Length: 314
Image (cartoon, rainbow, N blue to C red; front, side, top):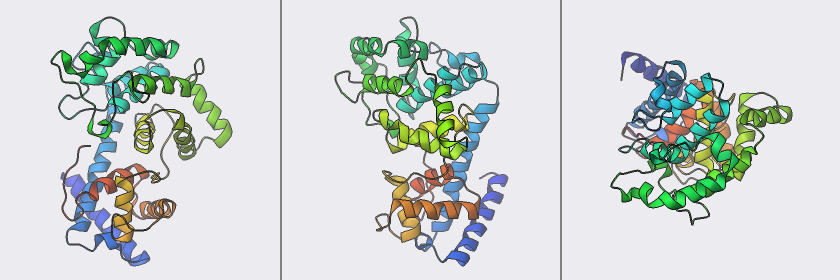
């Protein structure tokens, strides 16, 4: 840890001890090393959010937007597009980045080659995909084998998206997912229009807008609890949409739910309701100064190794 992180870790440990004095002991922290392991995961999660904020604020090489360049990065590209006022493209790039993910070895190669049409000319940008999703399906049918490695190039989904598929024949494959995303936005409606419509219904509180978008993404195939949480949270962190999670959205979660059960109930499968755990995490967050993104991420990783810190990259 850096000196700054060590200071933050000490304060977090003190806040957690104080929280337990006020509310009672946390069963999940009874093991030797559990508190230190949890605090270390909090620090890692804070740093991940700070890194996204750093991406939002710093200058980037224009090559980040170019899928023909090995420098292509959909998140940095989204920031650059957003700065240019190209909000729809920014949302789409974050969606692509979330759908494919960054593989630990292949990095953004799969997202890059799909977005850039394998260098065949043109891009599957928002203007193109939103006007004709069926054309993407036809293109994918021709190039599916190549994208799956027939040319000797490794292109893989990230660990969080490892169960996704490029199979055109699948009703839940990438082509079907992209088409469902287009239907969700509903061109010619734009992403900004979608947010403005929600403002009329739920107001402009970033937590409420996040929750409304989260619920509405039932319409997007294969974007369950984790996918939509990651997608919407990244839009907020990158300054592309005025949204922020106000809760951990534990219903339907696996790792975060297990982490919350362990922390408050002493076992990953403790008989506790998601709604009650979410409320307890909100209270815990107030006492420690930690937001829902940090709590969701950290307890998910912590429950994998609750008594010994292990760094997880996702």
